[in-house]
Amino acid sequence: MAVDRDRVEDALRASVRTPDTYLTELASHLIVAGGKRLRPVLAVAAAQVGTEGAVSDQVIAGSIACELVHLGSLYHDDVMDESSTRRGVETVNAKWGNLQAIVAGDFLLARASEIAASLGNEVAGLLARTIGRLCEGQVEELRHTYNRNRTIPSYLVSIQGKTASLFATSARIGSLVAGHDRQITDVVTNVADAYGMVFQIVDDVLDIVATDEQLGKPAGHDLEEGVYTLPVLLTLSHDSAESRELYDLLGSPLTAKERTKALKIVRNGPGLSAALETARDYASAAEAECDKLPAGAATEALRRAPRALLDSLVDL
Image: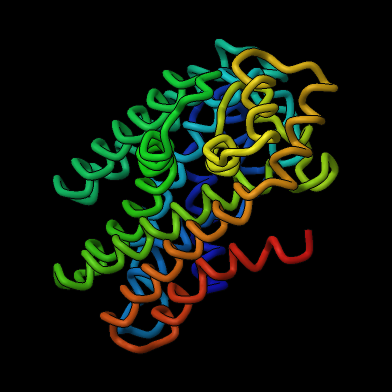
């Protein structure tokens, strides 16, 4: 996997190199800043199910197409959120402006589509549909901004679209390009989809429980932006004086004092543990799917991945 990670990194940088040095700088900004490359890792792991050794160049190409979609969406997210830092560096919008960030994000999506098209109609159509799913998930979130009565199903639909769908597509493309049969392809897609749900719930829990230093941004940023995630919604659904106090606090932008109070209520309330239990259910679903795959290092890595996300919360 280490060799394949290096291949992914090299291919990513090469994919955004253009004759225009300014555009290259914009497009490669977050690539150079680093990242876990979770989507390419899932694509490679899916391709390696039941096999040994390095994956083909086509699998690497499919994996970076998914990563480029992710990066393009980050450029757009940072504009919408007016974010100033990401991955320890200035965001593109903060350094060069919103217009440059939007165009550079569009360029990354275009490059992803071009690479996917080179892998065949099925991969190209799959990636295009996934970009649509990202938009649908984001719109579902936006339409409920500051909505204290947002439902749990609305939250789950949103994160399945804006987060889990791209993880699922990464694994599916890796499997398709590797030539696996449909049964294996469907199973690894389900595993990665469940992984994506765990990933987003854990991320939303971190926004509540981690410190400003651990997050690299103020804790409770989602609360402040009016994005009420699973720990918050589950706390609001509980019949208690604290939940009613939280309900009264939310519904409009928070002051720093109000944010601190809201965070304290959620941290001490029942919603946090209930959210983690939901994440554990998705992790269990992923593990059950892995039982349908051939035994091997790749299958074991896929099995362990969701629990590793949950374990990352232990030291907080």
